[in-house]
Amino acid sequence: VQLQASGGGLVQPGGSLRLSCATSGFTLENYAIGWFRQAPGKEREGVSCDRNTYANPLYADSVKGRFTISRDNAKNMVYLEMNSLKPEDTATYYCATVFSAAPECSTHYVGYWGQGTLVTVSS
Image (cartoon, rainbow, N blue to C red; front, side, top):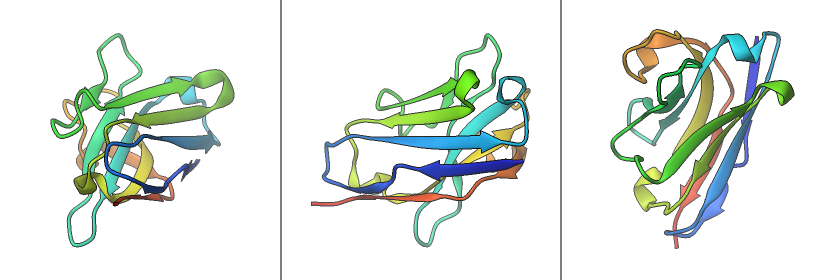
């Protein structure tokens, strides 16, 4: 199982970025996937999880209305569209497989972690 996040970079406040997560070694359509982030000096936290069911994706309150998770199972790709970025969104972002019945988007329910990509929001 491998997951590799990419697409991070430096962006000004109010700007947008789209993160990508390339997956391999498993059938993506059978898995729930999440995006997590870790800011310097802080614990890793859940940003958004797609449980691969008819249920709506989960979002952290801090990103609701600004971030959107999506997937392309045919391409084995997962995405995180980030709009209206704020300095407090600065962090290393990770994609991961998630327990499909997870009641919340939490690191407690992560199966496999991918490598992260750094997002810096600054003027």
